[in-house]
Image (tube, rainbow, N blue to C red; front, side, top):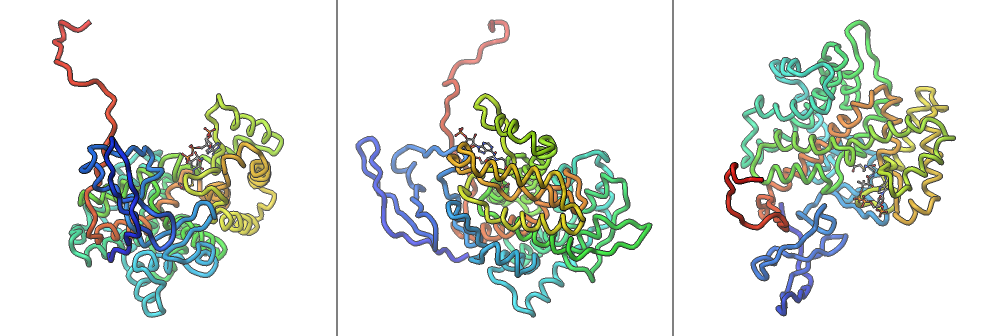
Length: 435
Ligand code: CMC
């Protein structure tokens, strides 16, 4: 990766009567960064930033977010333009190779992905080790990690061609694995990928087809799946992406790194929020119960949160949420659920929250998860699959970020420090002498 950051000025830090000059770099857009790499050597002090709220952990060319303005760009292209005019497979090319493909590149890339969708036959037997009632995210974490036990010929991270093949394998096989995780919990036979279908249609077929009858892909659902995947494809240095980069910084293989990202994504503050948001809407149940629920959210003694609201970076409407809201209406229209009680609760809740001082002052706006649960549910997915679908879509972002990191000459093993507040050194006390 060609580094693009340029020193533009320096910042002066005065610490213990010593003055230190710290270089300041600018990116192509966004806040400047103060380079503190030599701080410890020069001062003997660390910086302290739990949750990395003020820390840029890497240089990246992939995704840009302006949280105050509600802007999200993949390689410079606004998310709403990509969602409306592009396809997920084009977006995968954009994220992995830096540019939207021309026709010849798109044909080749589509073929490369399509011809990697099958799994090793032995891999199918691997699923049988899980309990049928396992959460599909548990299955995903284990199964994706297990890819490194099946594809030894693309594990050399120092070989760019092997890295590329691993990227293709991950993007291609993730829908097959996700669909198998779903089928396994249902107790239905696995469905083999079909090369004549496009990426979202193939995935829907692998999830919903059964041997007893033909399955015809609904184009509205295929489009919805495609847009859902575009919206979730990458999101800068979020928790799971940072996890992938941190795992990769030690030289771990890409399949192991993506498995670590999946594990991180599972949490309810991150990818698990779409599941939590739908559970919340169901718990509220009807518009009449909203005021009481909002009172509980605002109560300082309660830990109830309005799931699908708020974001570490967006202090404005999440641009993905606007597209997701439109998608939600289109899917509900298609399945004839325009009167869906969850949608009514969501829309009313959104209206109330956007006008309530508590949420306005804290700049809490709907995020992508607010409408995605209702949408996915109407498409036929159970809540336990929601985070799996997020993981499927985010895989391309994770692997593009991982590839970028491996090619970056300034990359080092990630190794944060700490402020230690535990006991200072003390002598071992024999058991007989302990009170
Ligand atoms: N409902 C009610 N209050 C909230 C919420 C919420 N959803 N989110 C933040 N707050 C309050 C919080 O209580 C705090 O108030 P106070 O200053 O009075 O203590 C203030 O807003 C700041 O909150 P924070 O926890 O310091 O903010 P954060 O940047 O650490 O948290 C977040 C970001 C996404 C974890 C949080 O907003 C949240 O828990 N939201 C609900 C879960 C959710 O929807 N997550 C999906 C995120 S988008 C998808 C993804 O990236 O994975």
